[in-house]
Image (cartoon, rainbow, N blue to C red; front, side, top):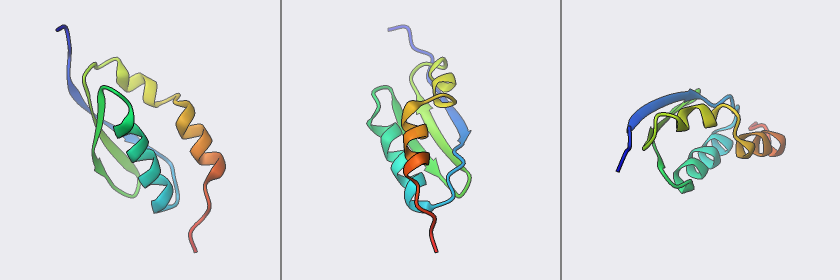
Length: 73
């Protein structure tokens, strides 16, 4: 197999913990990716192909979750 695995740190931009959790879980459900870390601002993802890191920046799931995001009190 021609793979180039690596870790990618991506700033998710969600303000609620629940939304960032849903985002991280959605990444893990995507073949070839696994969320290995999540904090207030960033998600760390293990990718099988380095080219997958560029897909995170323009991912439809992120846009949909941001539209649905409910601010925490």
